[in-house]
Image 1 (tube, rainbow, N blue to C red):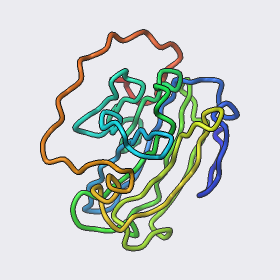
Image 2: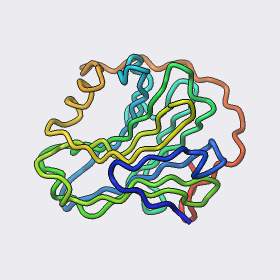
Image 3: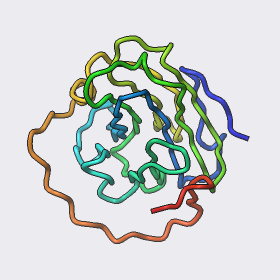
Image 4: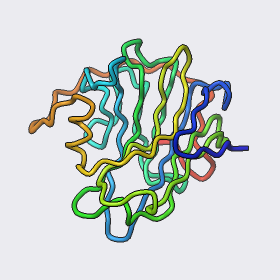
Length: 202
């Protein structure tokens, strides 16, 4: 049974699931709007000190593939695979965000959610809707953060700026050119990962 979260609620991941190979699904939509859904891997100062841990459509995985963008599936607008025990020590927080691509504001969104799935079963869900926001064009939906153990927090904090404002908030650079791709790492089999039913894993 999935635990329901509200804005500000927190829990240890180990209280939700014994698994460390997790599926994170986000559903967010509004008529006529397009959303960019990203994950920022942040250091202990909550800064994006390594741009390779900004996982989004142009950079769909981190160097060791502990964070991977999977695409739309199983009713989710966007989804990620997060392997907590492969995240390097310098990454202390994963912030999942959604920004509007173009004009529009978060008050226009339909009811949506961020959910955590472990072994094919949903274990946590944070639901939100447009009435919680006004003119914001970006929102921090939820965080995985390391505080002795990995924990989850439902955030729901909006930003008036878009993706650029989020990047600046996390201390990242708004780059004009594409960064060079890192050399692929050999991938070890990670047992236990299963997206929710109805979604084919890529």
